[in-house]
Length: 241
Image (tube, rainbow, N blue to C red):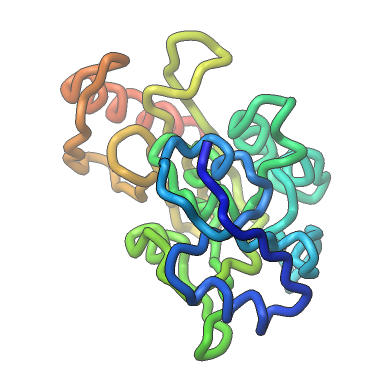
């Protein structure tokens, strides 16, 4: 467990940005990842709970906005949330942690195994941030490519489209396990987007036939993961056809 030297709970975004711009500060959202951190380096914690960053609601026609402090359970329960995103939110954390883990924490972590991030990628997610220089918005794929999140930046929300037809497929050792590889696809307005997990440091968008270069581990070799990508991508493509 990480060693905390100072705990901050700012009540304004300006104060929060000032704190996260300092050295050795870590943002605390739901705490599921920070509490599991095995680092022994002491840090100052900036708790975002007092900021108004929760809730899920319409941003514009066909677009939902989830506040960074909205929980994974909020996303899983949202009737207006696309079914593929709801199911991916359920898989992101065990039921005991979904009410604690947050959308912003998931995005900032950028886990390469996250089926939720893959689902958000195909739904054209945008990441909203507050920074010392003002508000910023970036496509999720751009945000993930630039991780880790730099100092003085706080994820405030994630918005994503709800239209189209989507499907997901996965291979895991057991139904409850993290997927070795998962694929999610969505077709909307004549455009298809496909994302895969388990092949890079973050989930990535791919095109059919792309040659991925995953690193193997005890759950599956690089060759096995590449073969899974071909099979799962073909499967989800067929489902949205």
